Amino acid sequence: MIKWDKMSSIRIVSWNVNGLRSLAKNGYWESFLVGTKPDIFCLQETKAAPEQLPEALLSPVGYSAFFSSCQIKKGYSGVALYSKIEPLSVIYGMGIKEFDQEGRFIGAEYEDFWLLNVYFPNAGQGPERLDYKLRFYDAFLTFAETLRKQKPVIFCGDLNTAHEEIDLARPKENEENTGFLPEERAWIDEVISAGYVDIYRHFFPARREAYTYWDLFTRARDRNVGWRIDYFFVVNEFVKRVKKADIYPDIYGSDHCPVAITLAT
Image 1 (cartoon, rainbow, N blue to C red):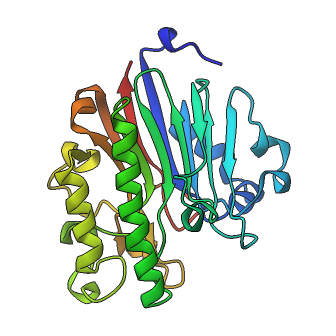
Image 2 (image 1 turned 120 degrees about the vertical axis):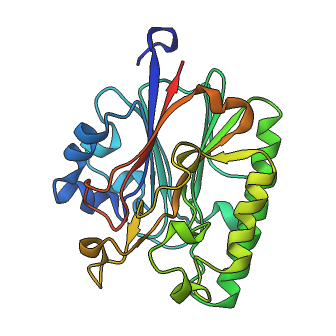
């Protein structure tokens, strides 16, 4: 493990991998590590329990690994966190069974911040699932605010919502579709009002065609018809520590691409 006081910066990468086992099987795992050089990396939609993973994924050289898998459906949801820096503590849920049992949350406490890795629900299965997503959103923000009383919070992951029209290629066509509904977007407004900064937009407020998800079936990535639904949010009081924010559209292996931030220690 790397000692905190030996590091001049920390690179944190987040990626919805849409299946961790297939990512490794198809050879994208190594190119991801080489391309992004993470000190900490947060994965969503792993679709695997630890016992299903090969050694290279279960315990990569130089990293401590932590997993949360879905308890009610095999091959569904799941998050993982790998860290070269040993966390002070790790938490695997928000203490709410209906949300925790889907394996959507890992929180790691470091010396001077909390890092929360979250795979937020998709609401594409109808009204009940939209209700679930919105209640998950509210529960998460409440929980993050509780942790924030201890130390600053960074959270990352697949929010499954594009915030503004600039964040998707076809906003008008998607105004009534989940992922761009007013009530979903309003929650991100609430997050920002609570003092969290969409760090990519902090660095690139007007950049267009910067997407993190593309539909596989329509080969949307070939035409860059995408959505920016993968984020890092950083509390206001910690923004000065963020030196860089990146999107990696040239890294393949999923229908999402990695996003990253670099912190000064």
